[in-house]
Length: 565
Ligand code: ADP
Ligand code: MG
Ligand code: ZN
Image 1 (cartoon, rainbow, N blue to C red):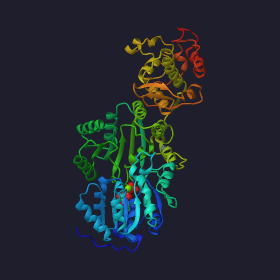
Image 2: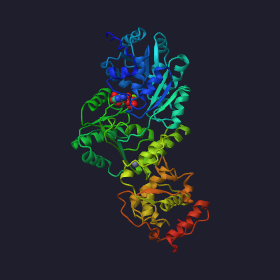
Image 3: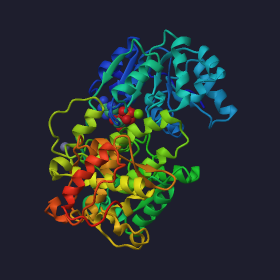
Image 4: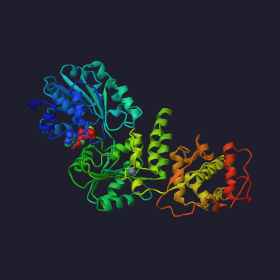
């Protein structure tokens, strides 16, 4: 390969106009570029599609030497380098996909000062070989892309990123710029600490993506719901559908194709060629739907993704924000749609509880999930909540999310929640039984199913005390209790159990505001309608449950049908 001549740019604006062909900087780009050209360190927080790449590419062109870019996206390095070369930028990369011969060429280019930009994988930078190589050339700056990967408590942790703190020790005079699209205030601090960016200037752009409409709908028949969405609002559009499992990816790609919507699967279980082929088609063709696990998307720069649909609950708000952020990079109206149901909460909780991680890991995972659940269960502006989570104040309502456009009716689920918790309590305490959500709901509804008869649950005091609510509403109650950590899922048998916080609800310290689902059939919420049964509190109940029992009695009315359970 013959090396291209240097572009010899005279200034940042010259590079912006002549090399990249853009008339002006966007947002804080100009300030960031100037700061880094001047030799300062920077921590850049900008949403996906905000234009982070130029923040290091332009200083790398203006400053003497090669800009070394650390990026976890090995699969995309080739694409990025090709795109830069088309513009005349002298760029290359070093990663594990290359053979010795190829690496030698790149190394020679670097040492000879013939590269403006060199992309390296984080694991490469940790090796003595690459470090010695870097000592033999001139480095203009280090750019650490997707810097949130250094956060051990984040959702994208890459152990190789931890070694990047050595950049500062080994090359103290080279400016460093760390960039990320995902960072809560806590993650921001963690990035700065771990990368030793103590003197770095922070550049924080708003994380608002005003053209994205956030919508979270109750999940009942996800395949149908998805098809309806695509047919009615996104016919012929490009979009991404995220599923939790590979099997679900395959199933839905097939389902959409059969229903006349061109769709391709993408997950880590497919061979590299298929993955690459599908990704290229998605990037190049119009109107394709990519059905994928979260293995797909990081670094994907397709401007006209019109919708991102989630068929399963993301594990964290960071993940949700990053995935939905792939919609509408061109600034045109786009949809972020999520179908969310009780099974999602059960499944995620189970995955956390059953995970191999230690207690700290599980706590952290639970904390991330809780934030996501809080968003799903909320009755107020979704955008405001997302932005508040990322440390921005957003006082008003956005007017462009489902909660704003169609303010949800809310209803007070505190008393039903108490009924449910007390049922779980009594089943366990008095009968030594644990059951899943469905059986508990059947008992409350007074449904005489086979299982109810088998366990003589129709003999329970609480049998039928929840007949005033619909099954959908009961599932909603369970979901919110799980979301708020007032109820837990026991992983081995998928049964529901009380938690240390259940008492808060039982004692009435916690009010549970429920989002009314469209499908909820009943209007009257009078709890007296279920007043059919009564019972005395057994003597061995703990304080909370006794207090609760008093209330149970009033729910049921006075007639005692049975003693105990
Ligand atoms: P990020 O890394 O923050 O997700 P990118 O650097 O990939 O974003 O940029 C997203 C898109 O915005 C790209 O298509 C890029 O060419 C475009 N872009 C970036 N800066 C500008 C600018 N100043 N003017 C016009 N387009 C820009
Ligand atoms: Mg980027
Ligand atoms: Zn809103």
